[in-house]
Amino acid sequence: MINIVLFGKPGAGKGTQAEFLKEKYKLTHISTGDVFRYNLKNDTPLGKEARVYMDAGDLVPDELTTKMLIDEVNKHLDSNGILFDGYPRTIAQAEALDAFLPTIGSSVAATVALEADDNILVARLLERGKTSGRVDDQDEEKIRNRYQEYNEKTAPLMGYYKAQNKFHAVNGIGSIQEITERLTAVIDNL
Ligand code: AMP
Image (cartoon, rainbow, N blue to C red; front, side, top):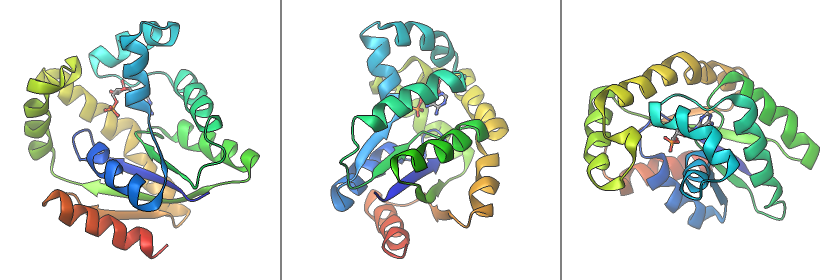
């Protein structure tokens, strides 16, 4: 399995790029945000637990998120590789992933970050909120809270993966195609 972690702030374009990368490299795309939203919509016990955090733009607790993630990965053990989108988002989650993947004979191959300026991203998310129906995209305060969560809890992952020589960053500003090309240049070189 070639497992790739797609990394970036909310609105950086992870979901959009994941659509291209999963086709090109025949990867299984797991977006923890999408799985949570599916559970919210279907009002499952997991959705009920996650809703209060998600609506506020807070991270869902690690234990709940990691359990869900492992359940998802276990559904795709015959995959070419997993494209992780939105996981890990804390050091505890990265450690949980590094503990879990070897149990299925695998590991993280690389982390690729999409970099962009906060102000551009906030404007993008507010625009997306007009059509996405996502409560967490519609209110600037909630969006700012998601950035604060990112800066406090997720940004330290850059150092975590740099220490493993698995961190790569690409400029996330440009056309969708340009950014896909930057990402594929990194992945093709792994
Ligand atoms: P996203 O679609 O990736 O922006 O995720 C939307 C929301 O789902 C986040 O603001 C969190 O509330 C929750 N979420 C998604 N992935 C994670 C994660 N790895 N850890 C904690 N919460 C998460």
